[in-house]
Amino acid sequence: MNRDSLQAYGDLANDIQEIFATEQEIHNRVSAIGAAISRDYAGKDVVLIGVLKGVLCFMADLVRTITIPVEVDFISISGYSAKEPFHGVVRFVKDVEVPVENRHIIFVEDVVDTGLTLNYLLRNLRARNPASLEVCTLFNKPDRRLIEARIKYTGFDLPDFFVVGYGLDHRERYRNLPFVGILKPGALLNKRGPK
Ligand code: 5GP
Image (cartoon, rainbow, N blue to C red; front, side, top):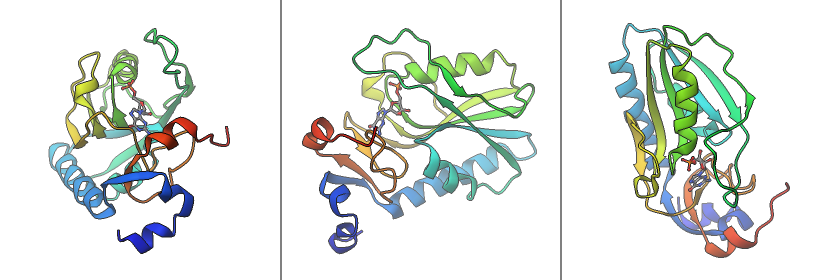
């Protein structure tokens, strides 16, 4: 994306310090993951389960690069504040609607950071007896991990930066940027979203 097309995003683009992944780079990685899933799961009963809302662009693009039959579902959970200690419990705002038992589940995440959210959600899904359960994440922050997370498919490893765009938000903003960018520290501290 050149500077002119970035300008079309006005205030949103002004808050971006640096583009971490362009539309083309994201497309290339998502296509490679889609091809790997199509190969690895051929002939299997597959369900992709995404965590709303950050996964919205990733899931939309990923499913279109998968060439085998798959079902798609979403869960939505209440966030926990960085100021509060995480007790390993998250609240389901929306649970999975399709059956999970005896099916091959691919859990699709936007970012695996400390791994705490993922750990809780995997334990919850595992209790429902899927045939298999693997993780696919667009971004992985291995340096920030507090609990081990086994990830089968990763888009990009990310250093300890806070990124937005391509579905990822900060206070509900920036999801509509087509690329992924590192937020300026000032924007991270000062901006108040609509919530
Ligand atoms: P964890 O429980 O692994 O620490 O938290 C993962 C969740 O934190 C992600 O699903 C995402 O919602 C949020 N998160 C972590 N890092 C980032 C980031 O760099 N950008 C955005 N937008 N969200 C992040």
